[in-house]
Amino acid sequence: DTAVSQTPKYLVTQMGNDKSIKCEQNLGHDTMYWYKQDSKKFLKIMFSYNNKELIINETVPNRFSPKSPDKAHLNLHINSLELGDSAVYFCASAGVNTEAFFGQGTRLTVV
Amino acid sequence: GENVEQHPSTLSVQEGDSAVIKCTYSDSASNYFPWYKQELGKRPQLIIDIRSNVGEKKDQRIAVTLNKTAKHFSLHITETQPEDSAVYFCAASKRTGANNLFFGTGTRLTVIP
Image 1: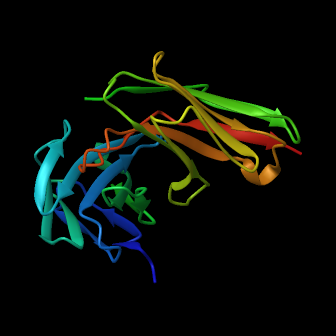
Image 2: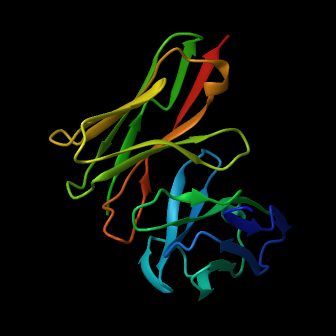
C-alpha cells in the first residue's frame, strides 16, 4: 500500500485553466503538506494542514487553495493557471514524532 | 519563519571518497533536523535525522553532526558509491506538533566511478 498517494502524476494544461491535484495518506498522520519544487529543485512549503486546520500559508498566491475534506486528504486547487506555476508539486504527511513521507509528485506543465 | 541554508549546491567526488554537506538554520527553537535524498524523478526520502539532544548520529556509511550553539548541522557520507548520486536536502523543524519542515536548497551529489 502506498503511504502517500497523489494524482495525477502528470498534468498538462493551458494558461487560465483551473485544475486540482489530489492527495491521500493512509498513515493516520495529523499533518499534511503541499510543497512546490521548481526547475532548480528548490523545495518550498506552500501549505500545512493539521487536523483540517490551515496552520501555515507561506507567500503563495491566493489562486492556490488547499482543501481538506478529512484528515486523510489534502487536495490542491489552482485557479487561473500561469506559466510560472509549472513545477513538481509534492504532497507529504507527518505525525507528531514521525518523519515526513512524500507522495510521488505531480509534474504540472502549463502551456 | 525558519531559514535554512545549504552548501555546496553541487558536489562531485570519486567513488570511495567521502562527501560532506553543510547546513545552517536561523531559528534557535528548531530541534529536529532530517536529511532527505531525492533520486532523479523520485520523491524525497528520509535517510537520517537527528534531534537536538544528540550531537552525532551514525547509520552505516552515513553520519550527521549537530552544533546547536553555532546552529549548523552536517551530513557525512563515507566510502561513496555511484548509487549515492542524488540531490540531498537538509531540513529543520520545531517539532511542536505542527511539524513544519523547512528545507535547504539542496546539494546535487555526483559520485564518479
